Image (cartoon, rainbow over all chains, first blue to last red):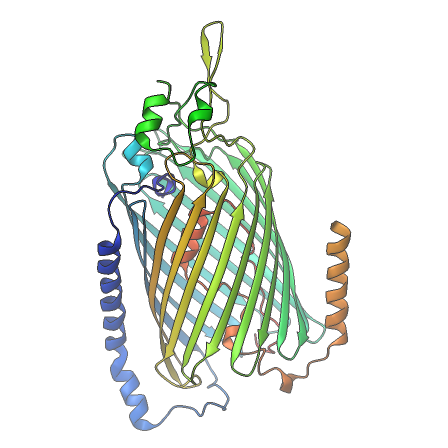
Length: 426
Length: 68
C-alpha cells in the first residue's frame, strides 16, 4: 500500500466503467451471500418465530457474521477493490465478545506519480487479519485487539488494550487505550533481509462519554501517537528545481512542464525519523423518536507542523421499522508539513549541488481539503429482535479533494461504494 | 485556549452529574444508531488513513444504554 499511498491523481482515462464493473461484482457477491442463508430466514418466517419488536432480545450467545465488498475509484486512475468478512460471538449477559476479520485490498494504479516516472500500471494485493475480544460483566470492561497486514513490500503488526469503566450509575464512562504497531517497510521483489526499514508506533488514547439526557450523549477524547523510524517511501523520487525556476511551477503543473523545468537530480524522498501526533475529538449523539443526529469534530497537530480539522455530521433516519437512510457530510482540512515544498529547490555551493535534507512528494503531507458526501441505506431483512437477524447495507460516497499546493494535480474526484451483508443468530 | 477546554470539560461533567436518567428512560440511548464506534467500514477507514495526514479519534466507549 505504500505504492498506493505514493499514487495520486491524474486526468488520464475515465474510471467509471471500472467502477460500474466493481459495483456489479459487489452486488453479485452480497446477493450470493444473502441467498445462501435465505432458507434460514424462510424457515423462521414460516414458524412465526420473530420476536415482537417491543420485546426483550433472546438471551444467550449471539453468533455474528458479516461480509462487505467495497470499491474505490478516482480520477487519478487508482482503483481499489476490497472484500472483507468478519465473524464473531458475544454474550451480552455474560459480558464477553470475540471476533475476527479478514480483509483483502487489490490496488491497481496508473496515477500521475507513476506516469511521471515513466512506469507502467501496477497491481498489488494486501491481506489483513485482525482479532479482537472483550470481557467485562460489570462496570469494568477490558478489550484487546491484534492485527497483521501483509503486502509484498510492507508488513505491519499491531496490538492494543483498551479498558473502560462505567461510573456514576452508568452516566459516565471512562476509557483509555494503548496500542503498539511495528511496521517493516521494504521494496517489492527484494527480501526484507536485503532491504528494510522499521517504523514503530505507540498510540495512547483517553476519553470519556457523558449522558446528558435520556436522548443525548457526548464523548470527549484525546490521542497521542509517537512514531519512531523512517517512513520515507523507497519508490518516491522527488523532482528538484533551481531557486529561480521554482516560482514558475504552478500548482497542478503538468508532467511535461515539470520534466521540462526540473533539474537532473531526482533524489529519493526523505522524511523525519521522529513524529509526535496529537488529536482531540468531540462527538455528540442525539436520538429523537425516529432519527439520530451524530456530530463529530477532530482537531489535530503534529511535530511535523501539520494542523488539521475534521468535521463530520450524520443524520440516520428510520424510514420504516426495517429501513434506515443515513446521509452524511465530512470536511477535512489540513495544512502542509513544515518542510513541504511544491517545487523543492537545490542550493549550489562551490559547484556542489545540495538537495534539501527533508524532501517529499507526498501530497498528503501538503495542504489539502477533502469534502465527502455520502449516504447509507440499511435494510433489515428480519425484525430487529428476531432470533435470526439479517440486514443489507449499501453505501455510496463521493469525495472531492482539492490540493492547493501540489505538483501534477490540483483536484481529485473519487467514488467509494460498499455493499455489506450482516447476519446474527442465537 | 487550554482554560476554555478545561472549563468546557468541567461544565460537561457537572451537566452529566445533574442529569439522572433512570434505566427505564434509556430506550433511546440503547438504540443501535447511538453507538460511539465508527460508522464506516474498514474499507473507507483505510481510504481515509491513506489520504489524510491526521490520525486519532478512534477510541470509543459506549455508555448510558445500560447494556454491556
